Length: 280
Image (cartoon, rainbow, N blue to C red; front, side, top):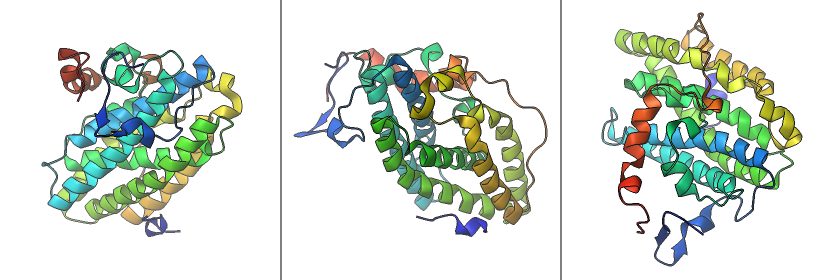
């Protein structure tokens, strides 16, 4: 296999509608209610990962190195926002909170995103390195989560996987392009991979919640072999090596976050908090 073989292809805070179409009708999983607090917490983990990465990618619109990439990163961000909406809606169904409540009216310690997704955009190479790790991980996650015994999580994973397949290919092609381009682009992608790599291990850390969920969830450690196989293939073609060094103690699943998250949330939440209850 080569890198090119990877497939190319009751609301408290307001009601969001577009004409007669309720946006909630577009969500994977429909109107299902989470059957337990643990299922809701797991959906929150995954939803926060997608939400934070979507917000990060949106910052590249009008700032990417070429117009086509403005569109590509924007579309990837919208895909991830769709995943986040489905997952956060499901998470909030347990205790009556809406997806907007969870996105806009939680404080930093209440978020459950992993530190990898919270890493700053940096330069374009750093965004691509982060996106490669994120999409390679999400591809393995959703591939396995399709077989969840929770039907809503399985449905969300089935829909999301098709989009993450494209996200992964997009980041692979850019990583190869930067690694094989100019001396400057290669230097930057090597540095970027080194910057994000300390946050990889957290993605595959088995937490106590996973033990309680059993076959409804995916044990993160079981995803590592598939992830490593993709990394090894892509890095071999790019003539890159997996960085050696420390692994962050990152505790995003428990509400301890990277310093950048507070700034990101302040920007993301300011409008909703300034005008609570607004509809549009």
